[in-house]
Image 1 (cartoon, one colour):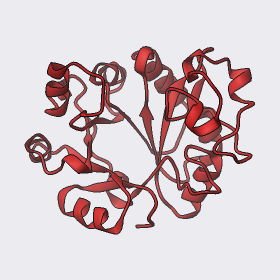
Image 2 (spheres, rainbow, N blue to C red; image 1 turned 45 degrees about the vertical axis):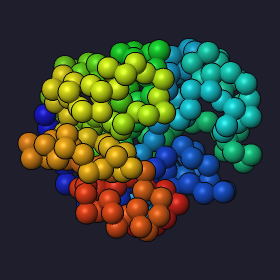
Image 3 (cartoon, rainbow, N blue to C red; image 1 turned 60 degrees about the vertical axis):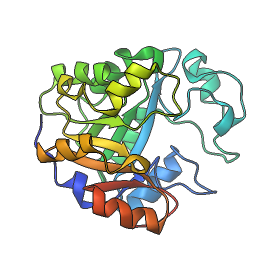
Image 4 (cartoon, rainbow, N blue to C red; image 1 turned 90 degrees about the vertical axis):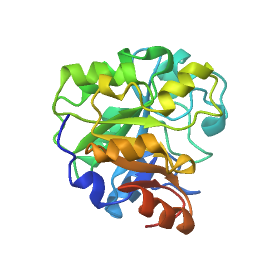
Length: 241
């Protein structure tokens, strides 16, 4: 595993960019606002139907665009015509974000693989080949993250987890993932854990082994105060730490 970089601990990380009513989540406008505020940017990526790396959180398009269908079943010609949150902001690609940010603040890329586990992670790894800014890759999928680790021993990786109570997963799998039992597959540099589930013995043990801990998602000043007593850094929205 790579040495935990100082930037990952030095500044709270803006969840899906610094978004609000005028700047939708995961938009270039939200990225611009985060850069202006000197916040690292957490963003979500998925694979579009044609293999494009699309910056979008949900698997379906309805919440953010009002359009039917799933990202991975939709042609890029359609995706690029949609607008986010009732604004004029289009859905960006990862290449769009990299060109916009240009290394001015670090990026934390959350890989939402789903049915594309393995393919997405490798595509993101390749897309970052010539990028010169600070980047961390994170995922809830230990197997996909392990594929990236096999390609790079120095890439900063984060394993995400929670209690998965709202996820449609088999109970034994929830048991395994919550307790980070598959973490050794990817040797993550940090764990991103649901603040609601902290403290937890598995994250405490990970920190004793030198693994960083990021708490998500911090939305209030009370959340921030609690998270700072439990974790090394936070992923936030709605507030300005």
